[in-house]
Length: 274
Image (cartoon, rainbow, N blue to C red; front, side):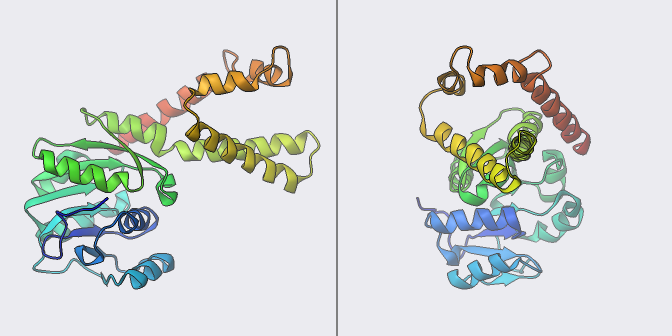
């Protein structure tokens, strides 16, 4: 993978190099991005990002530098910081710039008013930190085919990508995959607690719950079979798994509960978007 459109004269400018911004940068560098074609703006990057910048020979700026026109302006600051960040980065936007925001709740309309031009809203999730992310993308009408290809390639450096054609669907992506890692981590917590309640020592229950969730996830990633088929493969008729699934798949079981949880997260995302 390479990014020939990104050069020192037409760079990618990353605003915010925290966990998600740092994960994206790591993926880009691994994917072949020329370190000279990226600028990082963050007044206080975390230590792990500082180490990565030093190893790659990338300098960072406390404030947006002058005289730079970004090819891609990727804004990876927290939603509550967007009000201060957007006016500060406006000078980096030129006729060929595509601005990408990963802030939940900041609409295309808000971004267009502050920055103008081509805008992409992106909703990644934290597995991007290990190259296994899932990111939903929405583009405004000013985004060109080459913009789409470039942004898609950049985000694919840290996982899978899906474009939606309605901005409101970004809220659904936020609710499902954006927040989804927390649901999986809660499953690992709950499974460990259930093991302890069944009599296992706490350290063993926690190790086995973690290994069960991560191992099952890797099996799901590697297998061509759909999740339902993998589930059936574990389930012997009238066996122990079937007894447990009778509880989890009841009318008030895991499926309806997750549907309610995702709906609640989607409502909150809509509220944040105003």
